[in-house]
Length: 349
Image (cartoon, rainbow, N blue to C red; front, side):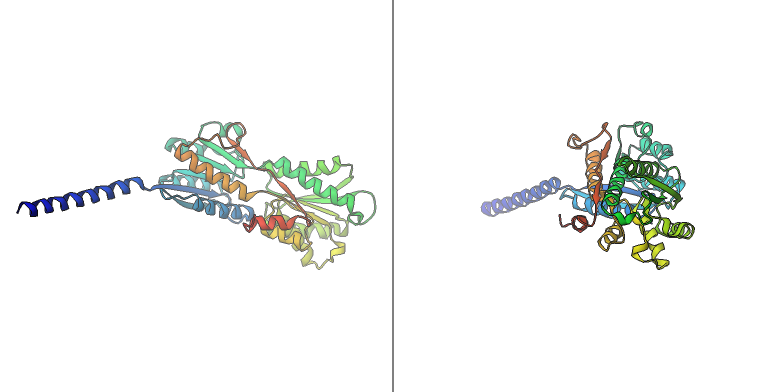
């Protein structure tokens, strides 16, 4: 009888030990849930749509055995009021960190106040807040690129082509007649890209004559309409088109397609961003060049920063400017190197 009781007691102790070990194992693999809220200024913007797609992939890849990341994306549809509501809904829904693409960079007080009140850090992206606003709280950051660099590179690309290809100056008057397709009125990046691109071309010794400019709000369809009007007004006098982004450059090309104007009678067209369709236009020779805005690098930096900030990790590995800004460089894209950037978008590098 004593032997039977001892065996039963040993079994009970063994089961208790296994149960305890199981509990210990579960404690070691406790999963933390990180909820990320992303707000786009306008989901119809091609570059922003591609960047956010990269961002979602990066958050998925940053998941670990002990970290589950969920991402909720909202579209402000070009309205700052709507964006404020989106941020409020995400915070009320329990988001731990926000990634915000501002509609109006000068109107951030509501968003920052909401985030500060609920202790939710924000990584702003693509549209840089006013410096004084970003410095209000030590959990606000910005990830993007320098618009001055994009303007300089676009100007250098255009100047290189003009110097190397005399056919750009179709009327042979020794100067280049050009038009501009600009983003939003008063938008910092649009203003800087435009001014810097033109001044860079002129600074290289090329004489320019501006025929006109038109606001197309970063939009391909609007650019088609605006460019069609410019073609009607100036015809073959247009020798160069400088667009603040690829969508507007593509809209300009669409306008020439609609009018069935031959390649020999078209101007050189330059964009900015390096979207998928922009790269395709360079590959087929309809766009002369663009400036690659590193959405893959920006998205990865945003994702890593958001996770690190929430987890309270050491941020010394991030190459900040003034402790809050992460700027990724632009790169020139031409027919000679476009394949490299196509491979980058496809994840082959």
